[in-house]
Length: 181
View 1 (tube, helix red, strand yellow):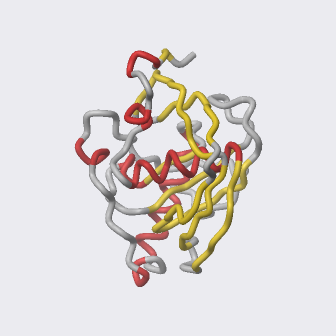
View 2 (view 1 turned 120 degrees about the horizontal axis):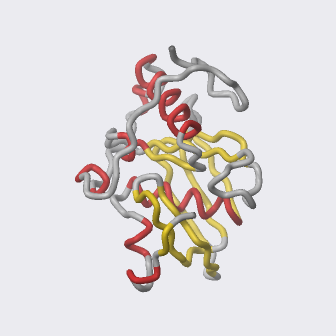
């Protein structure tokens, strides 16, 4: 059975996709753009639902299409009482297609990041405090907005996935990862 709505807070049986782990070559590829005409196709919309279902079932706060084996520039972001990030603010569901960071802060801050594709590891990563993003939403509308704080970090992490970059590539020292609790 599969959920057919992208709204938050639904409790339904869902079909989840497998999350690829470090070592899978798809995670190191630069993802392909989503063609404008593809956005409205029912199969692609069903994939976006599956992406969200997978994000929720794995208690992620962000998930990129390459992490589930699809080399497409699509990400899902959402956070509500997340057990992996208990201090994180609520973030309403967001689906972004072909997202690009068009500007960012010169000031950076550190945060301990983890990743569903690098299970049981976390590491301190320095990223810009805010980013300006240009993307298409799941309806195919072009959107530009500025994100700061936790949302900015999540967006940067997921866009890295679209570019074949894992958080461990951004560590100042590979020895700085820790086991996730």
